[in-house]
Image 1 (cartoon, rainbow, N blue to C red):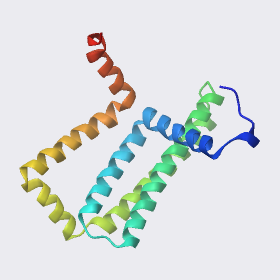
Image 2 (cartoon, rainbow, N blue to C red):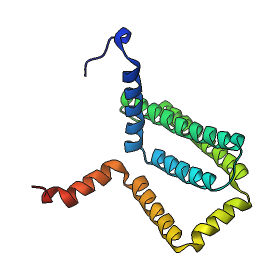
Image 3 (cartoon, one colour):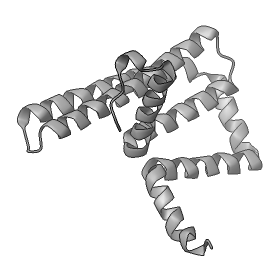
Image 4 (cartoon, rainbow, N blue to C red):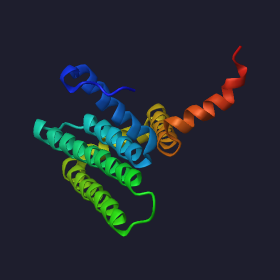
Length: 170
């Protein structure tokens, strides 16, 4: 791809590049898929209880910080791998610090989730799912789909689907 003249670069192109970067991170990074899966479940349960706008804002900020930290961590790791092909103590320290930043964000996001979500209404919502057979089956199915998404990821899932169904097309 030819580099574009920055003066001719459109906003649409900038957004397309940003979305491609997020997509690459989701496709290649298991930890990003773990964070996104947890975000979906947090938002699902948050929607089942009555939250104030401030509480929802806190959850969204916590989610955004974790996803942003994971994206930046991935960027740092890929840049380090690109610039240094051999084992280097300083590169390891840099990568560990970036991973530590994600850990700090994730721990504090979990604490925000506990403070905001852990209330009787959450347990009532969870119990309602567990006692309704259809809801329970759907919830368990969502957990299975989430596990496949996290551990196989979109790339391996597409490769597996191609192996299963690729030879059957005419």
